[in-house]
Length: 261
Ligand code: T3D
Image: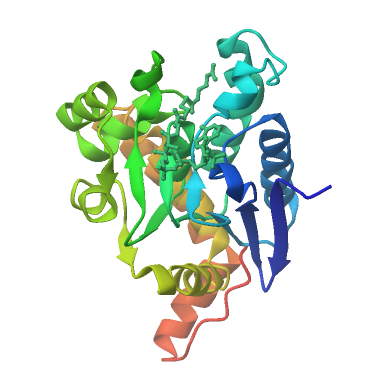
């Protein structure tokens, strides 16, 4: 049976490719289980220092598999239960993983597929990619993190309009409003994403983990509390092997050799 998520690990980079191209990588039970297994595997593997998520075919991910849902094939009657069991562990694992995660949005990212795209630390998009908060078109509300990511990245007015109007926006617009870091030509996207992931895999991984930890807490804190988190994490970062190496390499005017710890 064909895997719904392809996992490939090389040169410190784990690449997870959503692999149901006929349905624009819509999320059925198998895909979500395999995605979770892949994310957990990448998180646990010390050799992996960067993670790249992309889609096979012309789509990134069209969100929940509506045909499976209609046929009762999602296996879980209650949507809330399904989200808690299948989607939340993936989104949380990506944000909490102490390694950088790149999402390379190669085509349409709709519904929870858009949430997945936004869960990346660095979101790249192909020029023909598009983003759609499809939920309200079918009487649902944004889930899998969209109500968290959208107001934080794009601002509250845009979050409200995107969720309520459910208008598809293109990659340039997504970039303009802060949902995407960089847009690449379609033909160059996978190459650029791979090069970036490989570069990140040679950088100070432990510091990246702490950057994520600090930013994950930022919006819940006032300035004093956030300054304290920075100080605590900086104590740890400054004692790391990679910090010693980074400073020594700067002073010695050479390229640092980071080990990720
Ligand atoms: O209870 C719960 O389920 C809670 C969880 C919710 C999470 C969610 O994500 S809800 C939102 C679910 N997603 C959608 O509503 C998006 C539905 N899809 C679309 O609106 C469009 O397909 C797209 C805008 C994404 C792309 O349009 P287009 O014209 O480029 O492609 P297409 O022709 O519509 O789709 C191509 C094929 O993929 C097509 O199959 P076919 O006709 O060639 O056999 C289409 O049916 C299939 N497909 C697309 N999206 C889904 C899908 N099949 C199942 N589920 C999908 N979400």
